[in-house]
Image (cartoon, rainbow, N blue to C red; front, side, top):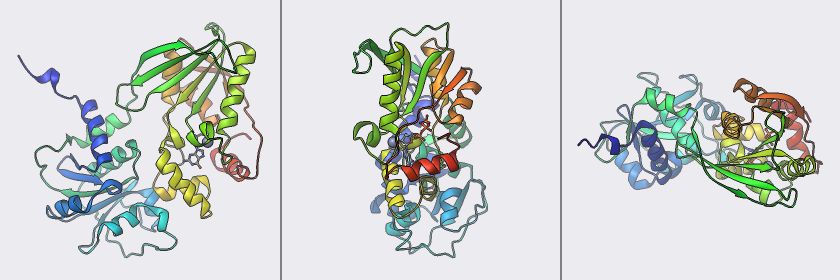
Length: 355
Ligand SMILES: Nc1nc2c(ncn2[C@@H]2O[C@H](COP(=O)(O)OP(=O)(O)OP(=O)(O)O)[C@@H](O)[C@H]2O)c(=O)[nH]1
Ligand SMILES: [Zn+2]
């Protein structure tokens, strides 16, 4: 009898490693130990420092804000000064205090050696919805630390998750008395996603569909800062009126950066940065969502052609690229107010939304 089938696969190790970073544990990637700055404790910082010279990995987006050249393309590796403490690391990672405590160089970039482990660790931090800033040290891995090969880690991070239907049940809605909620679970340990099927859509004709990214603030609290809540209810109402449709509720809060980071972005917006600039200052791209999920969910539901309710041409293009025919784009315009008008203008100007 071999224990191999009981041992974690690469995908399972990655899911564990994501949890490790979130609770403050380091993970080992090809001889580099890395811990997320956001969850680092003083004790772990001291333990990592004892292993060798510390290097801080940041994304090129964060480096841009700190006025550091992106020596490794999409990332930078910086030598951590011997006197730097947790407060210094946090200020490098988190833009909250950029304005009242600007981080000034000169920073000393590390240009030798392979940046691939740092790249894998930053990808892992993003996928754990942590600030993309990782403290690293080249060292053999102590026992008990999760180990991942860099190349395979990066490949695995961009792999499309397989969605498994878990449960479904009828769910009468105010907007549509005949509806059904399906829960789908990805095989990568990530968040579950939901499909709301309204009526019984005719699979032989284009189905009225909406890909909705989770927005706790807009969908649940009725925030006036974005258009998500009104879009959600308008889409359900349109499907209820038409008697059929499907709304995919994708758990990609804050365009994939998670609610904590979205609130960090909102705090930056209160300082005067727009929605795109705020994401960049945090070290993220404008949009970190993976829309392949939407195409996979539609396929699971037996839907191959849709009339897509969206103002975002990127969603149309992504679905088409992943095998779903979008026969029509149905605009989903909701009222403006004084809190969301700037946000909507920036979406139109910078993200190509047709508003
Ligand atoms: N990072 C970030 N995410 C935001 C912000 N405002 C709203 N969101 C998120 O953006 C997502 C909604 O995406 P939108 O860009 O509004 O719309 P879209 O889904 O791309 O396009 P439509 O189909 O036209 O609605 C949700 O996940 C929200 O949580 C913000 O200021 N910053
Ligand atoms: Zn929103």
